[in-house]
Image (tube, rainbow, N blue to C red):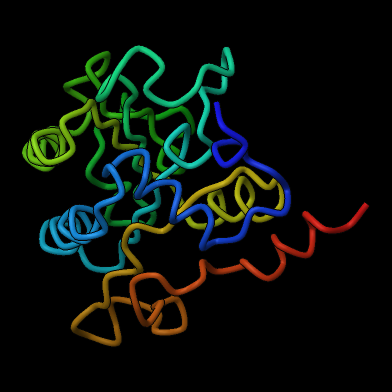
Amino acid sequence: MSASDKTTPEMSEEEMSDRVIRLVFCGDQNRFREICDALRAQLPEGTAAVLRGSAVTGERWDDGAPFDAEGQGTSDLDLTLIGAEAINLFKADGFYITLVHSKPLSDKDLDIAPDLMPLREKLQRMVKRPVNIQATRDFVRFLRGDLICQPYRFAMAYKAATSHRTADRRNVIPALGAPAPGAAARQAARQSP
């Protein structure tokens, strides 16, 4: 693993984004945008999507092996959907914490989110690697990412609702590539002793 593949506490949002695009999309930002467009088109309103895991950190959590250690396309892409509507796409037995944090829709658990299977299959064809899709509440994303400093990269900002009654506009991130909520706090936490 090269030095640029190692996650450090000082890693910026831009560095994480560059790593994801380099590792998962072979440096092709257009392929990353296509994935983001597919997510926007198929996910419910009020939903955001973040990439997690070795695509962001550059290494597997369990053994430290580099991303794609066994060859191109062998590492999976971990996608976490954030929001109530995303949570509702999972069956009752598809959760670690009921209606809060799901298990990943993966080859191991193919039946826990049937409505997400077409999206998963499409994403797998697009990235030519396994894709795991999980759902969580925003406070879990905040806890894991901003307080515990587990790296993530927004792939899709909160999809704006068509009605002010269906989404809190304060949670809408204006553009792809915008800093993730809490990015400044996360950066400050990384720099403190």
